[in-house]
Image (cartoon, rainbow, N blue to C red; front, side, top):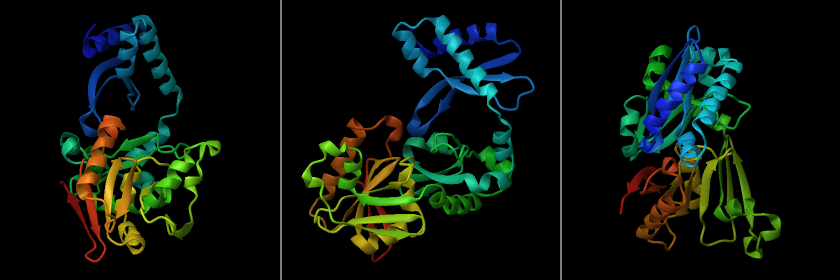
Length: 316
């Protein structure tokens, strides 16, 4: 089979023979940056939640030689595992805004690459980016269990986008506080101590604000910082929280923003000697060589003007 939908049909038929009383449909689900994943949605009569099991990775396994019967069994096992988990808390959270509001947070995605997705979800445009809203379903996990707020869900809650934005922005730094640190320190944290060169020695001062920690390198003229959140997941949105750019500007002056992924951005003082064309080249190289397609945020860079308190896009 050379087509994933043909493969999905084969899985569907096999699963239907095992799971009686279930209605199984094949769905293409649009993800970030236009990525489309193929899934089997399995609905059982009397159950309000129908899990969607994505088969893209299984298709790759099939192409490498894994048998259809093993993959059919894998789908059934995933479905059975989902049934074991109690879905009542999920329903309870999603059906009432009062139950969901303290779990809302913001995520930042590319507007142009997600125009079809954005038709179905509430959002707020900032330059070439879009703020969208997620519900953190399981506080015991680091934002791996989330639900994107859709227009349908917003209608169920009987609220508008402004109310959603206000609540999500209030929650985000509480659920996942913003952090800014020198790029060198960020790299150092991900390198074993025995491999850390002496060049990583820094003179860092830490400043703590409400939901925001800033670490400043006092001994480095070429200051490159990373802005993210505590979990390092969906941290690029932290930059657009109220007063974050203003506070960074107090330490760095006007600065450029380099969107290195949906999880973090880099900031560098505008007074640096680097040309904007060079910075744009850095971002595009990272996007092309270092990131998964769904992690790319933008090919452009941005300027925060400290005096005007403006955030503008620089395309070339």
